[in-house]
Amino acid sequence: MKVRREDRPGENAPGPVEEGSAGPGRPTIKAVAAAAGVSTATVSQAVNGTGRISEATRRRVLAAAAELGWSPSASATALRRARTRTIALVVRRPTDVLGVDPHFSELITGLEGELAPRGYGLLLHLVPGLAEESALYERLVAEGRIDGAVLTEARSDDPRPGLLQRLGLPAVLLGSPERGGPVPGVGLGQQGAGVREAVAHLLALGHRRIAYVAGPAELVHTGARRAAFEQALAEAGLRPAAVRHTDFTEEAAVAVTEELLALPDRPTALVFPNDSMAVCGMGAAQRAGLRVPADVSVVGYDNLPLGRWLHPRLSSVDQQVQRVGAAAALTLLARCGEDVPTALLEGRPRLVVRESTGPAPAAP
Image (cartoon, rainbow, N blue to C red):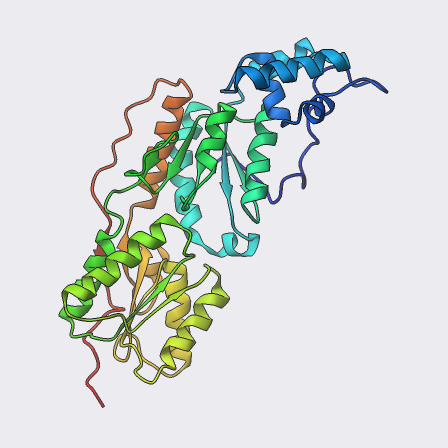
């Protein structure tokens, strides 16, 4: 598994490649970009005839280059046009969260299962926010370091697909197969189906006070799953016992579980946005003296292996993370011009029932 990780743009990474002569006082690509009011990636596209930039922008860049007396070196141009056989996976997470969330291990396993046999490597970057992620793509393209990118977690008004289209970089977006746009989405359809199954399962067990822990509100899958949760309850004539949006950290999972279990009408069931948070929630409930599932039932999402190692074992929605990763890799390789089989990804998220869910406790 050839995975290289970079925690922040610029940390533990070589400096930007300066195309053209780099002697003292000689113009650089950065100087041209500054003079033309564009990024270094746009300068590269203008001089190499790649990407999608306007004719006005191309002329402005070339004029700035001519005025400064800059031209790309032959070696740099040849290097840029060569295949790197490297794919970027950029994750907007703190390093400590990534280290404890096995979702990404499963995803990387699926990606590498298709990339590695074809001689491609995966370059993993961790970034704190959108600005850093966008700047990273521009830098990687300007330096000619990657052939494509895997985008994680579609967001409302997501600017990244448009950015990568402008940069001329092949890409796929995980988790949104129904979403149109310049970057194809790869994932199981009907994102809310598994949550609806979880609600139906809990209702059949007699639960009427069901709380939902949702991820960050700006994520597309957060909205789809919350809507499915609330609609499933509404069809049964019920409302959520509570809905809480939070991040994906261990601290947030513990804090929100403690808050929900302290409500006057304590929920008898908790549904979490991923398995890692569900495990933290189970631990918080047990430390509070509650039994799972006798006092409170818990449902996770992802159906990761750790859910089968617990006691009680975790009921969880299976979204086939490894298969999604493999399909994303094949789709991206095809966009990079490789001759690969068509990525087939059928089915929808489904609930896997285990011992963490049981009959609702009798009213006191």
